[in-house]
Structures are given as C-alpha cells and as structure tokens.
Amino acid sequence: MLFGFIDRTSSATSLRASLDVSAERTRAIASRVSRASLGGDGFALPIDPQAPAAAGAPAATEPAVDVEAEMANLADEQLHFEATAKLLQKTYERLRSVIRER
Image (cartoon, rainbow, N blue to C red; front, side, top):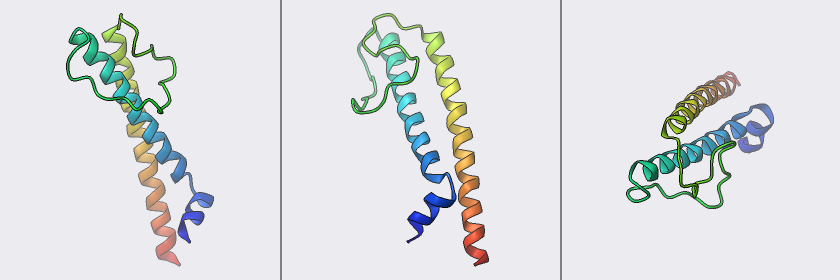
C-alpha cells in the first residue's frame, strides 16, 4: 500500500536507482585502476555485464588507462554518491514526518 504512495509523493525510487548506478560506476573505475596498476592481473572487481557503462568512461578492455583521470572520475563519483545519499536520507525523513503526523 505505501509503495505506490512513496513513488507518487517523493523521488525516493529514482534516488535509490541513482545510488545503484553510482555504485556500479565506482566498481568499473576501481576495476580499471586495479588492472592498470597491476599490469592487467590481480584483484580486479567483477563488473556486471548488464550494468550500464559509465558515461564518458573508457572501455574496460582499453589497454592504456590514465590512472590520474580515473582517480579524478572516482572522486567525482564519490561526491555524486554522497550528495544523492543525503538527498535520499532527507526524503525518507520527510516521509517519516508526514506518516507520524497522520
């Protein structure tokens, strides 16, 4: 019953989806950096082949990886994730407040 209510009255669903995409982008960046820093071997994180690729990011099979650029992308993605998480937290706080008032 509340699931439809939450979707109609807030952006919680889209914010959660954005967090999932951001986490997948972070995994992709970390995998490229680990492969580059370990010469293609090592502890590269598994990437879900069904997940969308990070916008503007080089393909994971690309042999030359600019580690500095990838670390900058990682920092940007971390800021995006944290901002989205705070927005989602505030959205849930507002929903709890509305539910308590009823």
